[in-house]
Length: 309
Image (cartoon, rainbow, N blue to C red; front, side):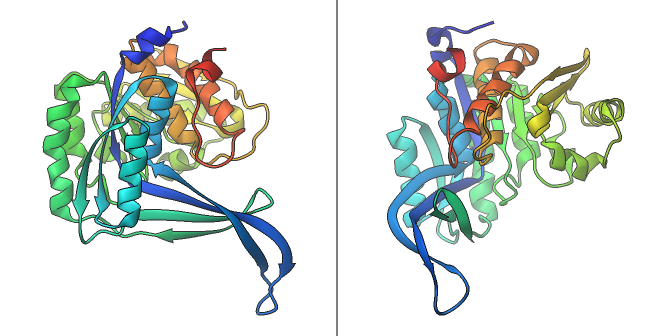
C-alpha cells in the first residue's frame, strides 16, 4: 500500500534519544607524513549533519512526516549547531541543556571518498537533565502518532522504562532501536529493531532461520513486545510477531556506506505506522528506504519521491 504525500504529512513522530553532531572533513591525500607513516589530508571542505537520534528525526522529516525531537545537549558550540540544524530542517525540538555535558561529536576525516579516521568527543548527561525528559515524553506523546526511542548507548535513555510506559499509556506505538545486552529496559514496547550483531549479543548465535525464529519469538514474548524486527544487512530483514514470520530481501543496488541505515529504517517504519500502516505493511517500504540510503555517503536521508517512485 502506498501512502499519499498528504497522508504522510499528517503523521507526527516523537523521537527521543542520544544526540550527536556528525562532522566531516574532506580533503585530498597526496603524500605520507614525514613525521609518521600516516597520510596527510589537505582539508578542502567541512560538512556538518545531525547524527544519532537526531538523524532519525531528520529522516522522518525528509520523508514528509512531522517530527518532534527530545534530547539532551551541552551548553557548547556543538550543542548550538545541533539545535540550529534541527530548526533549519523544521523539526520541533525540546532540548534540555546540561552545562556539564560535552555534546557528542563524531569527526570523520575523509580522503578520496574513504573514511581514514574518526574522532569521538563525548561524555554522559547528568541525571537531573535526563529525569526532565520523563515529563516531556508524558506531555508530548498523546499528540503524536508514534514514538521512537533511538538508543546509541551514550546515556541519554537512562529512564527509558518510564518513558516507554508513558507512551504506551497514551496508546501510542513505541519503536525502539536498541543497544547493549540488557533488553529488559525495552519491555512493553511495540517493536524493537536490532541488527544481526545486536541480536546475537542478546540471544546468542543461531544455526539457521528456524533457530533465529525460535529465539526471536522467545525474546518477544519475554519482553511483552508485539514484534521483533531483525535487520540482516545483505540478507534483508525479518519481522517476528504473533502471526509468525515475515521476511523481505535486501533492496540495495550498491552499498556505498551503511552509516545511519538503521536510523532510516526505524524512521520510515515510525512515519508509516504513525500514518496508519501496520508493521507488516510498513516493513517492505522501510527495507526499501534502507536500501536507498546505503547507496549514499555518510548519515543520509530518503525523500518521499525516492521511496515511492
